[in-house]
Image 1 (spheres, rainbow, N blue to C red):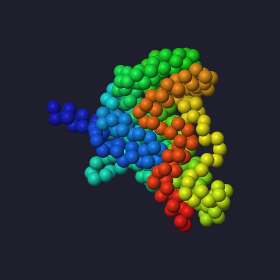
Image 2: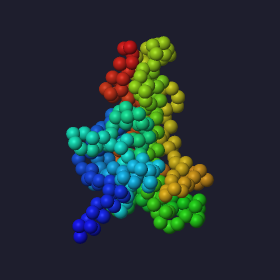
Image 3: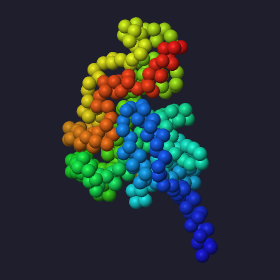
Image 4: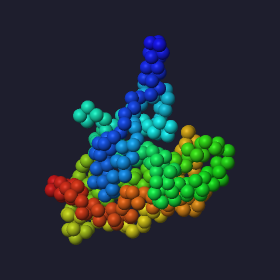
Length: 304
């Protein structure tokens, strides 16, 4: 019996990292950083974190022998997300998700890793909210994926196996969520850049650039972020998926763009029900102009 125990221990260390229940606090700091950055309500995300376990990569994963290209992965059988170390940080002896600032300071793309985190927890949401139809918007989202998206997959990938097609429905949901978050973060960064605040590098523009911004907007740029183009296009209409990936295979949705719009509309409504994101860049800018978090950035840069 002792021999079997040692064998099991070795296999577990090789193939599986230590699994931990997410529980309270693991997602709190990440959630707060998203909320501060975009004004989204993140209580639903913390609810997801409370029912989803996570682990670090196994020895073989760290060695690049298995899943060498995946920064994170979700196992629907065990409801466990495996995160690379770039997404996690030790805090008081406990692991938690990194904030946007902590991801940025670690030298990695804060938009990319924040999107990956959101993507993986969306798989858990698909299993525990969409599939059982937890609310009417969850049921509608699952129906749209299970009918419209499923028929598009058959049309675009007629030789794809049944199991892979089923997994792809969850991937479409998760990739859409990731696309929404990275788009919002990119737009916020662009608005900051136009005002001379370089968030990615944590720097301010040179004084002559800041003076030019102030002059262009009649002095109001000292205290406010400004609109630079048509900012009223709804994210519900503009955010779409071009590609999704499942088990090493990609699918290009461009040939079925019009059909998939119906799916994205329903997915946006479900997202809006839980997270209340800005509906367009104008709403995002309005949030930024009313946020002490962003006002502090402007004050620091204008005071240089």
